[in-house]
Amino acid sequence: MSAVQHRFTSYIFIASLVILLLILFHLQREINQLKDDRRKNSFLLERFSDLIELKEERNEPFSDEFPTPFTPVKNEQQYIIVYNRVPKTGSTSFIGLAYDLCKTNKFNVLHLNVSRNSHVMSLSDQSRFVSNVTDWTQKQPSLYHGHIAFIDFSKFGVQKKPIYINLIREPLSRLVSYYYFLRFGDNFRPYVVRKRQGNKVSFDECVEHGDRDCDPNNMWLQIPFFCGHSAECWTPGNEWALKQAKKNLIEHYLIVGVTEKMHEFVAILEATLPRFFKGATNLYEKGLKSHLRKTYNKVEPSTETVSKIRDSKIWQMENEFYQFALQQFNFIKQRTLIEVEDSFTDVGNQFFYEKIRPRR
Ligand SMILES: *[C@@H]1O[C@H](CO)[C@@H](O)[C@H](O)[C@H]1NC(C)=O
Ligand SMILES: *[C@@H]1O[C@H](CO)[C@@H](O)[C@H](O)[C@H]1NC(C)=O
Image 1 (cartoon, rainbow, N blue to C red):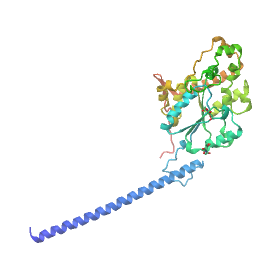
Image 2: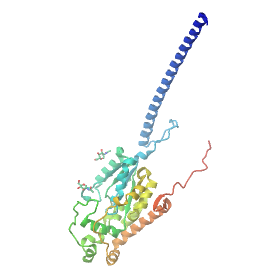
Image 3: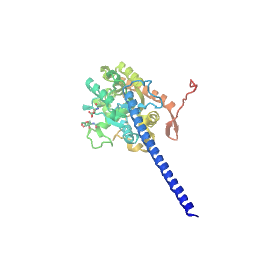
Image 4: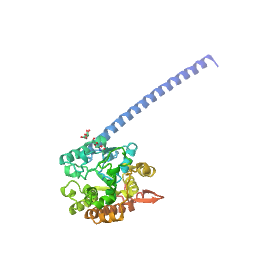
């Protein structure tokens, strides 16, 4: 190779190197530019979804200026469930499931403690409760539970009503359970001294002597819990209260289960409100024993006692309400669940859309 030729190849080599470097430099700049754009875009996107959420919160309709590629944010964040639990219906076992699930399923559970165990609130307290529950968005999705009679949120002028759920029990079983609970407590809080601690009178003896604790009027509880905060609701034997309780059950409650069928109740909730109850059925089946709160020393009443109680007007009315709830529950259950090997699951989506027009 001559010296001239050699120098020529070197020039070519250096020139190619320079060009290559220039290309690389250019590419790097392009990449940076792209990254920058993406950052800006995602920032815009975030701002945009904030805006949409804000609009949703104000309940404003979407204006037409919005370009369409964004799907509206689901307002599931604003779910509120109120479970106005009736004492001695298995509510502690049930709410235990919610406490076990709240972390995984990302919702809040809040116990409403009403002073002196009163089941009715003053009007001003109702108003404070309604606006607090509605406005406390940091806690939503939220599940409130407490021994409180039904409150109609719309009376207080709020737009969003909560989802009501409840669980009721055959009225005599509930009374017997409560009777022994007051005397012996339960395995849930065994250390708590109960109101009638030390009293050894059985339910049968109580009925025989006509004592206050087994007075049929004590069964007047599930009707008023559903009837609500009107005066008549709390008058034992009031016919209007029974009607109103049924009406509220249908109009305001998503689902009312019965203690005797808690398994199915949990499965329906999981199928219907998975946002809260995903995994609940499995948890219930696994932890059946640990969740079950058991009243100590409970003795089943004799047939004589049972027939005596069943003669009372209060039992008959409360039982009518219970049967009414049970009928609704079975009706829902039949269409919602299938039973497979002692477990219940959602029958699944049974509807679809067709003939969607105009075609695109
Ligand atoms: C409600 O609060 C009172 C007073 O703090 C307390 O003694 C009571 O145990 C609470 N009730 C429940 C069911 O936790
Ligand atoms: C609701 O009440 C709780 C407890 O009193 C309070 O901490 C919270 O700030 C209230 N939330 C709203 C939105 O008023």
